[in-house]
Amino acid sequence: MTMFVLFASCSERIIVSDADSLGLRYKVKSMDESFYIAHTSFDSIVLHKKIYQYKYKFYHDCRYSSIEKTLYLNSLPCDSVKNHFPFAYKESEYSLIDYKYVSDSFTTLEFLDKQGNSTGFINRKYSNSRLLAEEKYSASGDLISKTGFRYDSDNRLQNKTIFYENSYIETNYEYSAGEKFESGNEFNYRYKFDVNGRISSKKTYKGITFLSETCFYYNDYGDVVMQREIDKNGIIKNTQYEYIYDSGNNWILCVEYNCTGNIFVRKREITYYS
Figure 1 (cartoon, helix red, strand yellow):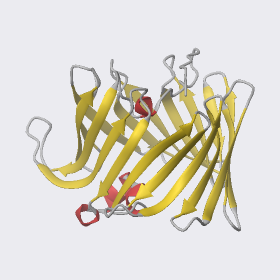
Figure 2 (cartoon, helix red, strand yellow):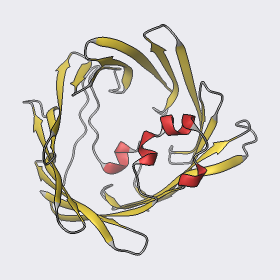
Figure 3 (tube, rainbow, N blue to C red):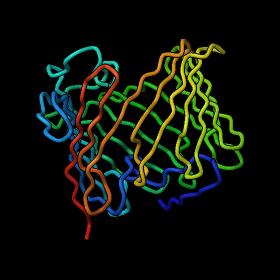
């Protein structure tokens, strides 16, 4: 499946591969990423508890081969971690996602447990590299949900609708110069982009009621070094990030200092194709 990256002044950058979606540069063969809570400074980090570990494998064309997820539920220390990673309580303790590329227009994601038993699968259908439909099934083959994607004349996502047996969730997207508007069933978002196609700010609304605005600041590598959130009452919350990079300009250590005083650490071990 061939994909291209397109840039336009102050418009959203198009993600061109699975590796690119993780911010990875060059042809990565594998990446082991672990997330910890720490209790000291960047210069002398003492890792306290491991929260999760993801092991990614990629094909030569930067598509996923597999993702192995291990979540250490007994290590989640406090509500601050729960709020920072809401997905943590939704994922199983362990899962392996195996990607099978049947053709340029059809991909299957199979979910396996620690014993190698299937716990479900997802079928994805594409057209001209655009994801058109996704169907999620249980291990026994029962349909759980169907998702449809619709695009505008500029190949930008216009609508995403998830259908369940008795309900559905719809998200719509609209675009103007340098901005994207996302409207859902409960919350709405307004994104602004810089000249490199990165998000510069994100406003969150419930209906038409303003809730907060988050501004993003980047370093020369294109990684976020600070997020500044201002809520509807004018309260400011800053989150700062520091990085160490390898020779491929991919970060291998990220330290996060959030407004609650917690320190979180992500460590990466990356191998490359020759």
